[in-house]
Image (cartoon, rainbow, N blue to C red; front, side):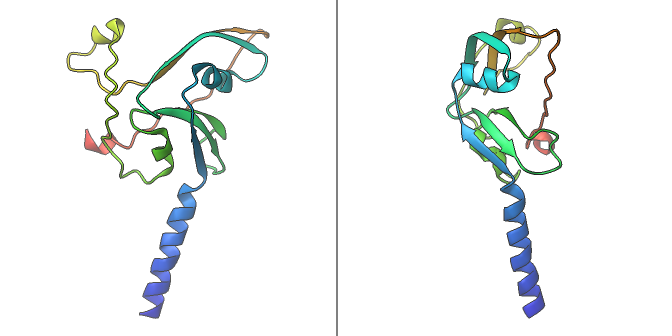
Length: 141
């Protein structure tokens, strides 16, 4: 009994610690998000954002499996939920933005869109952006 209880406590502590490697700060300022993506030495203009409430933010990551250590996060739910276990699925923020280009390729409704758009001028000859894509809804749809 003591070993089982100790194992259970250890498992819970390890699980909580594993998710604390990702820190998300809500941020819906389009220019700030664009500049976070591009870094220094790049001029950003015409930045816009369309997300539900608290659907965007910046993050830092201290783990080894994600592939990036910091950047922006765009979600169809709440950005702060990204640091939580993946059981959070199908949160809807009610953002029903309609894009004519997207509507031509989607036959159903378009719900919970989140995007940031911007123009930029690099002060160098090339630019590179690393990104990761993830979803807690893969197994649900």
